[in-house]
Length: 214
Image 1 (cartoon, one colour):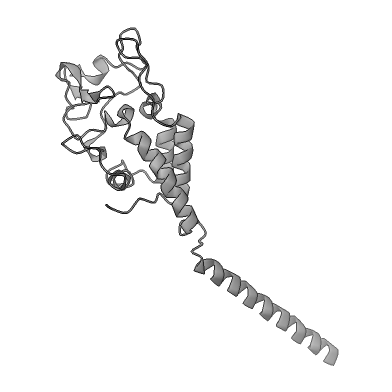
Image 2 (tube, one colour; image 1 turned 90 degrees about the vertical axis):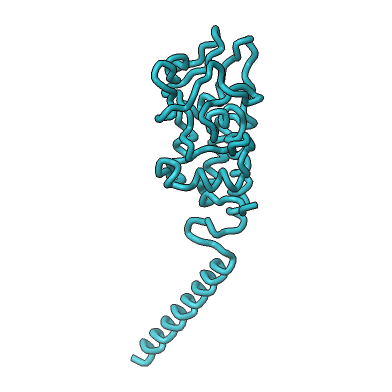
């Protein structure tokens, strides 16, 4: 019985020491800013912010921002001039009766005429404008806050944003924009679509961090 009692004491001691070591390890991890999702890890946040800047470089390229306007009309070309023939936004961002987007923009590029196309061609809603009324592109922080605001982005969380960037036909069009009327290829965004999706994934996995307001 005495020997058994000593064994129980030793076992209790080892369990107690093990618990103390585990608690110390956990406290150290928390002190370094780690969490189950990694979103509080400074390194992860920094990587997310770097990835966001890559995403931002695409969102504010003419292939994207020409439709993410603050104006009552879409823009065209690398110089982002006003759309020809007085095209306007309309109440549903798809033009007006008799001159809606689908009148000219079909489900694919028409390189013979220089008219770009993709399914459901339309302007982005004003809640997703990435320029001001003076045609100045919004800052990285402003665009980031806009795109992550679920009251403005059709209630998309990080997973939804990643899916949108990966699968939305109008997003994918930006990386295969076809040719202009004169036959020249339209300029491409600074990333490929695969790189854009990878950057979005890194940003989402980091918790969709946004730069500080400037």
